[in-house]
Length: 91
Image (cartoon, rainbow, N blue to C red; front, side):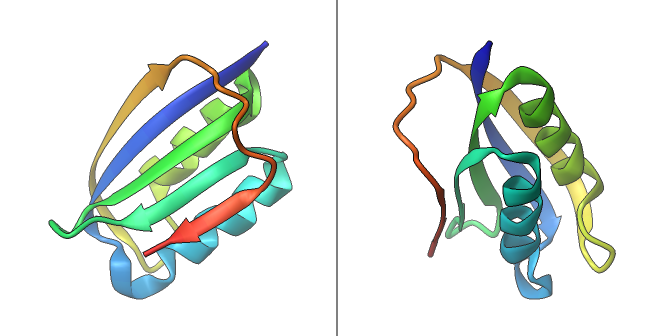
């Protein structure tokens, strides 16, 4: 079953390649979506795909890559839209 999750990550995540790490992991998991930095310092990501890989992406965001310091993650399940056919990095 396809699902969609929106994730907001706070902490020191912008200067460590967090967005690129998320994109690489998403491609490995076969998940589509996008990720971008927000003006308030958080990172927002949307993932779409099968339920298990999307859940693994949410957990990846909670851990973060080695250099990231993730303070908090808010994850919300949303209605699947099927609008993505790849993965996008947005500024």
